[in-house]
Amino acid sequence: AQSVTQLGSHVSVSEGALVLLRCNYSSSVPPYLFWYVQYPNQGLQLLLKYTSAATLVKGINGFEAEFKKSETSFHLTKPSAHMSDAAEYFCAVSDLKWGTSYGKLTFGQGTILTVHP
Amino acid sequence: DGGITQSPKYLFRKEGQNVTLSCEQNLNHDAMYWYRQDPGQGLRLIYYSQIVNDFQKGDIAEGYSVSREKKESFPLTVTSAQKNPTAFYLCASSTPGTEQYFGPGTRLTVT
Image 1 (cartoon, rainbow over the protein chains, first blue to last red):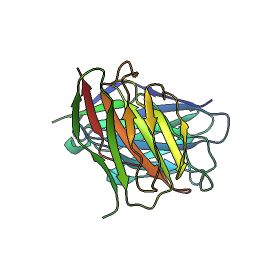
Image 2 (image 1 turned 180 degrees about the vertical axis):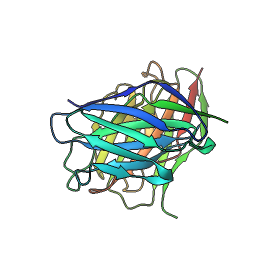
Image 3 (image 1 turned 120 degrees about the horizontal axis):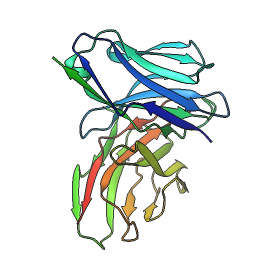
């Protein structure tokens, strides 16, 4: 069975500060990992994905994440927060072989990011 | 533009009534999914379908039903047997080699 733990249900930063959202996973097979963002009352939008290529993954809106197998982590970072980054962020894991099957995703509980002026 | 449409955006029903949520995609994806979202619990998989006329239960299928008669459409019915139906419902679709794409969601309130 696979699982995802997001440390911190709420994170608050000042505009211009570093954003760090933590995600740890558990998977019995090599994982495929995703970060999604959700704005209020909207669907989810993919930020970035790790599919066993480079361990440092760059996504949209200046976000990036690093896959660390030894720590079973996939933390999301952004060097400088913007007011428009305020949203809820979800980490997800899929244990199906990328590219050959359909991914059933297991999601973390989500982290709400607040950005203060 | 390709995408996923969910309608309506907000839905209100009385307890004891069945209600059907619509999900349509024009991305030509084979697989479609339904998730339920509750505050602080992330997304939980209700049902998924990888091909027309076939679907499988997810983690929380009790009290829900689906059909997949067309590739583009995957409606979800919330039955009166679902004990806590009030939630935000999200539909998604995918094809091998891609991530899941999500619709805008339907917020269902049952009183």
